[in-house]
Image (cartoon, rainbow, N blue to C red):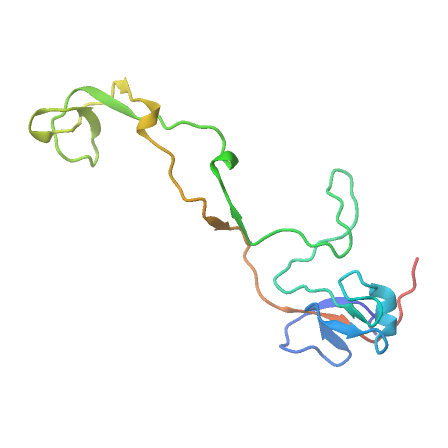
Length: 171
């Protein structure tokens, strides 16, 4: 027998009899008074005629409460996001050291070669090893501050909550 308010994962595409999907739906207090006495308005509802079930769609549940060195997580609070937008201020300070050769260039293709002084006939590159540090402004800021997905791998299943069963005793 299940406890009223117990939540579990299922592989079916429907909530079994006596259970409801944890999709944030509003239920009438009058017809679900036992479950309301356990959940209250923790997950929503007006507390007069309705209360809400937890909405676990697209969400990973974590343990609520306090712990040494952990951020307090009150029951029913939601945290996190599926994407994050990084800006230059989110990145650690760093430089891109670009080196060049102070001699005239000897080849016209950059692939596998180094920057050089302007040589004859548009030869801007050389096969000689670099010996000069270029100005840091040579390499500029890049990027568009686009959202980056941060979701872990997942498999979609349904969370259901028991509407009927044994009323849980409080410790």
